[in-house]
Amino acid sequence: MSSPAAEGKAANEAAKMALQAALIKKRAVDKQLASIEGKIYAFEGSYLEESSNTGGNIVKGFDGYLKAPPTGGAHKKRYEVTDADRLFSGSSLTYGKSLELKMAAEGR
Image 1 (cartoon, rainbow, N blue to C red):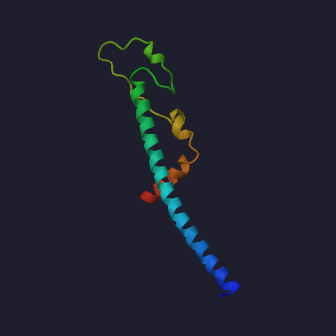
Image 2 (tube, rainbow, N blue to C red; image 1 turned 90 degrees about the vertical axis):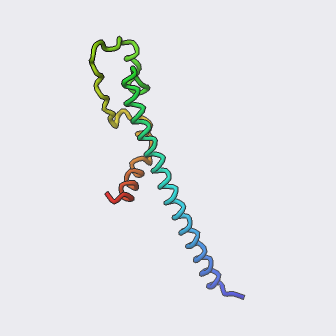
Image 3 (tube, one colour; image 1 turned 30 degrees about the vertical axis):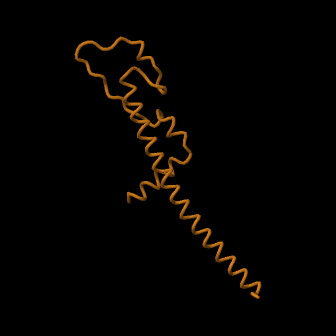
């Protein structure tokens, strides 16, 4: 028979090991989430830039479809994406933390 103290110590060690495993899994999930949110940020930026040149997008509206295309050799001005335009990235509660994790991993 084992003593109650030995059983308590064994249970404590088992709990510590389970906690360590859970923390390792959480870090892996955090990295995966940061990666996914980075991809969303990039896709969102490319959508906003590309769609601004074709008449509009869901953020700024589609007023450009109603306007006549420019004539002559005039080139369209490049659209600058702002943080206010980023509805999807901005709606994430974890995106800021994901950026911090990514920057820490890159050593910035």
